[in-house]
Every structure is written in structure tokens, then in C-alpha cells.
Length: 132
Image (tube, one colour):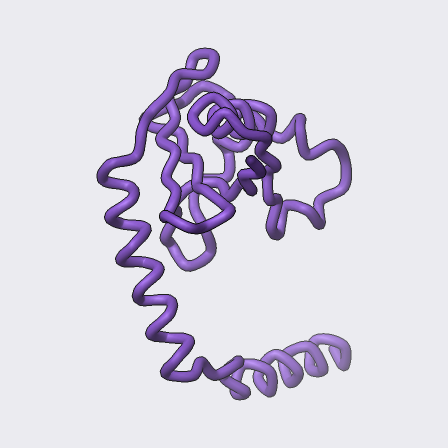
């Protein structure tokens, strides 16, 4: 019972903190990036890798791109995401695991189709670094 009370108290205190603040400059940069990425997604090429089709979006001047499976229910994996980027750009690509990097086991065997969206509800796809 004491443990539960401690957990509830800690949770209440942490939730009252509100989290990090974002400066107006950071908000402006994020808004510009979202606008640029939305424009890139409209003209992004698609490619078929295995049974799935992917849209590969890249904002001009950026070293990374976003790869998103389009209308798929078939399993897909990290190598599929990297292959889609490589086939579009003709360059080496490297998957950016983000929070998935904290998982134990081989991330290359994780069915990415099971991970539907980002925590904020937005998903532009999986992030890859493009090295030409």
C-alpha cells in the first residue's frame, strides 16, 4: 500500500512539471520543417520492395529521408526500409531506430508493420540517413 501511494505521489508530481518548454525559434523551425516535408511527400517517389510499396520522402538539403509503407498489411523489416531508400537514391542508407534502439534482440527481425504510428499521432515514416 505504501508503495502504491509513493508511485501515485511521484506520478502526480511529475505530471505537474509540464515538460520541457519550446522556444519560438524552435517552434518556427519545426513548422517550416513540417511544411517542407508535406511538400516533399506530395512529390515523393514510390518503389516496390518485396510485396510492399514504399513512399520515400526527402526534404532538399537534408541528409535523411522518411520511408513509409503504403497500404500494406504484409510484414516488413529494417532491411526493406533501407533497400527502398537505396533503390531510390542510389546511395547507402542506414535506418535510424529512434526509441526502437532501446529494444533487446535483433531489430532487423522486428515486424515494423506492427508499429503503426509515432507517439504524437503523426507518422511520416521511418527515418533513414542517406550517405552519397
